[in-house]
Length: 170
Image (cartoon, rainbow, N blue to C red):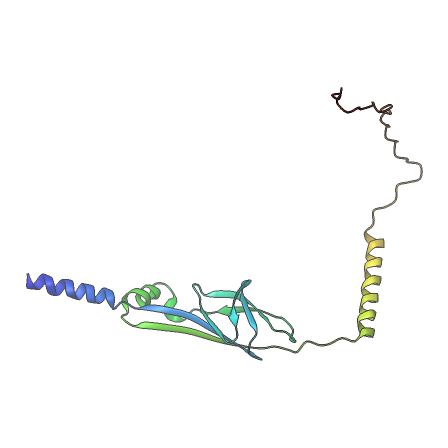
C-alpha cells in the first residue's frame, strides 16, 4: 500500500511540474504611445506586450497623431525546441517554464505637411491622369448606320376616375 501511495505521489507531482512555453512579444516605438493593431485588432499603446499562439507572420499597424501610419509584416521565428518532435518534450515533459519573448522596436516618421500649392498641383495631376484613362477605356461608339430600335410606348391610361368620400374604389 505504501508503494502505491509513493507511486501516485510521484505521478501527481510530475504532472504538476510539467512545463510549458510562454510565447510573447513586446512592441515598442519611437515615439512611444502609438496605438498598435495586430491583424486589424487593437492591442494597446506602445510599449505593449501580448501573447501569441503560433509562429509565423503577423501584420502590425502603428498609429499616432502627427506621425505616418506604419504597416509592418513581422515574422516571428520558432526556436529550435518548438519543432516536432522536440515541441512535445519542451511543452509537456520538461519540468521548467520556458519563456519565448520577441522584442520589436519600430521607428515612426513625422507626418509631412504639404502646402496649399503642392496639394493643388497633385490634384491637377490626378485629374489629368484620370481624364486620360477615361479616353483609353471607354467603349467604342456604335457606327452611325446602326440605330437602336425605339422602345414601344405604353398606351395612355385615360382620365382618372372621380373618387368621392364614402364610396369604395372600383
